[in-house]
Length: 135
Image 1 (cartoon, helix red, strand yellow):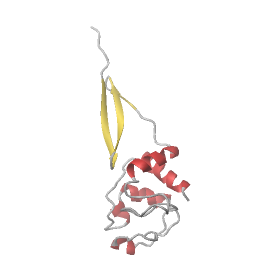
Image 2: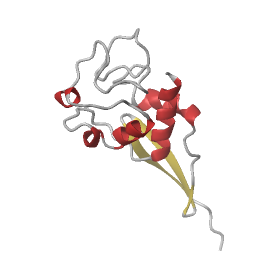
Image 3: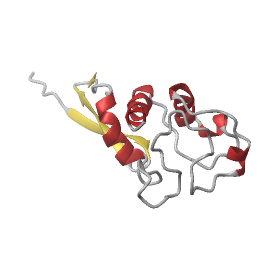
Image 4: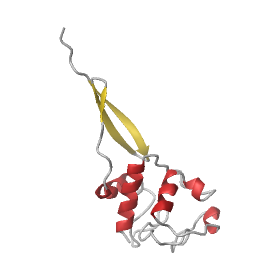
């Protein structure tokens, strides 16, 4: 009896308006490459750029500009009106704080209005590496 390999493609949501394809062949999952820092710009564009800019010349969007976010005091971007939770925030953004923020924003700043959450560490790492390059 001859059995053919079947291939199924599944979309797994990563956040706002994006998906990753996982290919399964004959029941065995083929792992996708992990996100690299060079992937951060593309990931930012698909997952973050709807609400955030990466420069100071674009008009402010729903979220603050993220240009030079590393080392910036939380809630302190010129021209952006932050939520009440950020008025009480007393920390400086670093890679570790951004990682926790992208995992669960409300854990970092209770009452934060950002709904995006990213459970995959390789995606968070790539986006954070991209933001770090903007400093």
